[in-house]
Image (tube, rainbow, N blue to C red; front, side, top):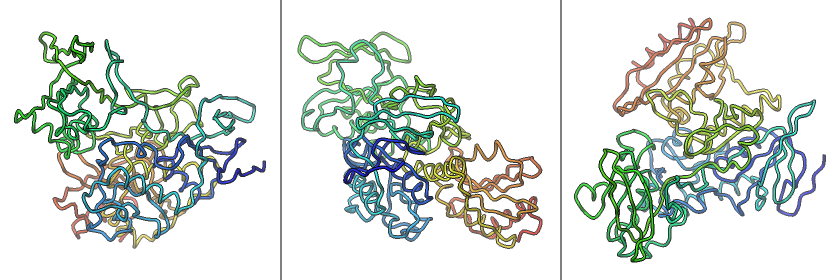
Length: 509
């Protein structure tokens, strides 16, 4: 069906083989990858421009993810991506590592406006086409003899497609139920810092958003109390972004030193208006004891966000957790409603193996961008019958190839024990580079002999290679020793790799 373009607004309502919803980092990376693969699709966004949540947050304007303008690898190389958590990834050299070119040098954590400009620049330079100002409002499912069609209702009209990818983020403000919850402001409604001058402030929640507000308001608020049932977890202890990021620890230090910040482990019971016009906040210590009442001028719920799924759960999309994240297969497809996929931060619903209890980085740009590229290739192969590129590898080059990947492959460094580099070893077809794949999917299926390369972190600060070898349907795991400098290009590592891969490829060298 031919479609008419409406000026600079592409993708008018109609039938499409694939529809992507969103224009944040996940959607932009996905549509870039789909376009480069030649997969026809439409992209819709309720926003007026690229950027997603980075058009608004974080409130105090400084990201938690770093970009190092000067790093141990040349800018624009694959290895440099290990040190640049915020640029989207491109095949063309001119479109790589955009973020460091837009930073003012005051911090290696980009500001929110710098991140927004990074995403806008990527979309403009790579000529991505998105129908902005088109809000998704509902979904219908129509089952027919030739398959299922999803009808996406929008403010511009209806879009019909057999495959839809929702890259809508975890962006819907959430406040847990308790008496008087409606009296609190949410993180998303935070005012200008000076409006909190000389006020007593209660912040509910001890994740990054709570400590971000506390850090930003330290010089303004008279007193800050941070409360939630669970103890504070610092990212330097958990070795991940799950926990308060290290640069937000000033409120924690002030609490320890008695500097006007109190951090308490207590559950909310109620918030009510006080006779003086402020609030009375009642909390109960999780260690037991009586209810404590706190006088406060302001109460902010920094209690996170949920996924804005609209009516997808009514159609059969199952969710889990407080954030209502969709349960997903390793390839980010709804575990309960085939044909519905997810990209961006919402992709954290494909939890992976969670070895040593460590989560993936799918909830952040530096992990989600690789997921999106893998998803694009998966959709191209499984939904559009496009042949995957599988370069051959000579046995004499196999060990060098494997050592190069565990040394510099950014997908493995950013998505530890989650994404893997796979080399198939078919006696008839030879050695083939099968590309980056979800580790859970690779280990769960496939009968062909293969070498599966990953990196792993066990929570102690160690990062080390793990190589899985599948031979005759049996998988064996080989854990390499960690290196204190994270350098795996040594002769000792090469000798170990040679020993491991020869179990599948006897003539490897």
